[in-house]
Image 1: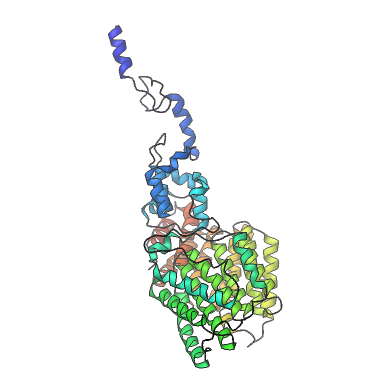
Image 2: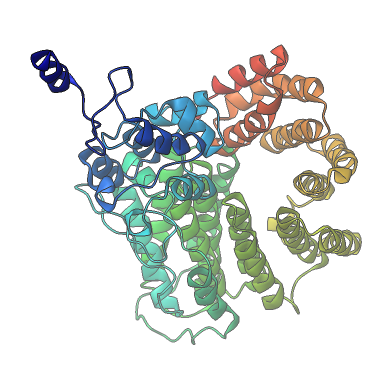
Length: 518
């Protein structure tokens, strides 16, 4: 009997966590006490020790700046008490199992700051391990990449501005797209972004004769403008590829010429052409999901417009930067940028520019759920727009027509409907008016309108109608090769998930997954 008891004791298993012997009738690999403690992991990530993040797979994900790989490494980490399935982690993150699977495989890259920040916060990733959401973070240098120049800290004089543009464009032309995308989320935020830009309110340092080279001639200026006009048309097409490289190449060449040009009216006008190209490069970068590059070129657009004595265009660049902040879930930063543009052009802005800036102000209030402030800003925007005079606006405000005004107000009311559902009918009314006014040639804008209308229908509890609109616009979206359009479709798919029991919703979400950027 004693021999049998000793044999039974020797074959009993020990709990790998506390070392206690596991009862013979317990088929679990943990003792009852450790299993009871492990159940809390069903409702959220467990507490992990500091060395948890030093695991080889984790280190590789941090080095590659790949959140999808980090999620996979976290799930498969050997220190977990119990297996972390995709379903369990997806419930922690507030996404579907299918979304998590696509993130882990790299099928859907995670390039939005708000999503990166949310995932890191849920899992408790230490702040010093993050490659995003940190002020002044340098891009990791690799064999084909160097750290981009600091465009926020450079001096505000003509020669420094020209050198900053030249160095930035040259740096971006020298790196591969893959290397560029690894740092796409490393953007400046908060005071580190807004405070340096406040210097644009100060008078520009005198354009002294800092070069003895020949001045830019009228013929040379006209040739530069023709090239810029041709490249500007590519800005609304989206994508990365050769179009963006052509813009960067022209921008580098122009900046190199400006670095040798003396002060004068043609030099100032050439700086303004550079501001145009910088804004086009920023838009293309943003569309490709390269938020850090987009921010750099928006900042350079502000700086070159300042050197070109065109504060209103600088305010337009600030408004575009604010839209980027809204896209990244930073409405407070976006509002500060808009207010900076409003203050800097308080004496020079036309009614149309005032209306545009007021719609951006309303955008921030919509994201923050401030209903009264939103409607105040919208009312002021409509009043300002009604005061515009034919022929009084520069060409670069031509795109902000009545259709754009209605479309922006409608889309922002849809955002506000997420906080106050009573705003949904007004949102639909404005978006439908935008569609009736929109120039058919503005294909991407019309796609945004239709997606916005579909999302409004979803907020209003009409999923079938919403999916019908998306199905109509999908062929157009597939042909646009626009990253921003695809991301809006993905937002719709996320919002439609609560109706996934409907066959039409499942089919539409599957169709959205088939749309990819070129």
